[in-house]
Structures are given as structure tokens and as C-alpha cells.
Length: 144
Image (cartoon, rainbow, N blue to C red; front, side, top):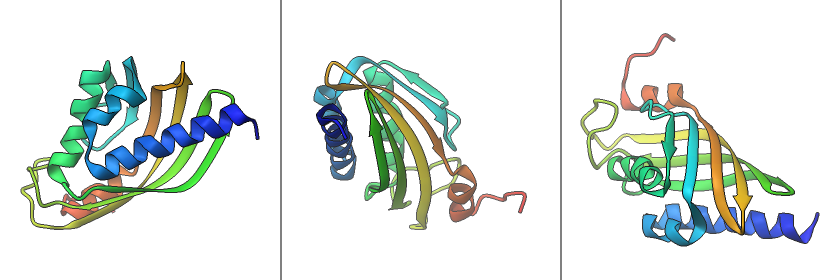
């Protein structure tokens, strides 16, 4: 693996550490100002363009689950891209989320992300969260 790929993986680890600390302000040094976050999330945000919008999107998860933790299960890097398989979990003890009042439920789901790095910072994130599992944990009626 190239040295650049290892550096990019370390950048993603630092980003996950910031999320685990609830330190959204650390994103200022880890992400480019025109950061783009896009994918499938249970809130239906879908896309956040620019660092302020991205920080607000992540903040919505942290307000709902102040103890949110992200565990990296797998990480692969090539050139300016880093792909991760994550296990995210937290207790819904904060703000209402997805129309559900907090009841302390443990919410645990898998997420898959591809990060692109530009000039030593995170530039884009394409992701897929397991919304079905999140809704089921919150007691939201699902098809199954």
C-alpha cells in the first residue's frame, strides 16, 4: 500500500475519532470548506453541500444520540479514495429523531462510506446507512 493511501486512512481515522468525541468543530481542520456529503440516510437529508451544512447533518445525529460511537470494521484505500464499513451505535436519549421522542433505545446500524481526499483533507463522502435497522430500533413501523 502506498504511503499516500496510509495517510488518507489515518485522516479518516482522525475524522471518526472526532465524531466519537462529538467534536464537530474538528471537522474544520479535517474537511475542505466545500465538503459534499451525499447518500441514503434515515432522515432523508440526502445531501449536504458545504462544511456548515455537513456539520449540521452530523449534529442532528449527535443531538439525538449524544453517546454516538463509530467503529471502523473495515477500511480500504487506493489513491485519493478510502472506503469504510462502519458499525455506528448510540442511545436515543437526546433530541427527538425521525419523529420519535427519546426513550433511551439502543440504535445500532451498519454504514458504508467512500471518502475522497483533496489536498490532505476530506472532500466528499458518499454513504449508505441501514435506515431499516435504525427505524426498527426506534420503534418505527417497517414493512417486515
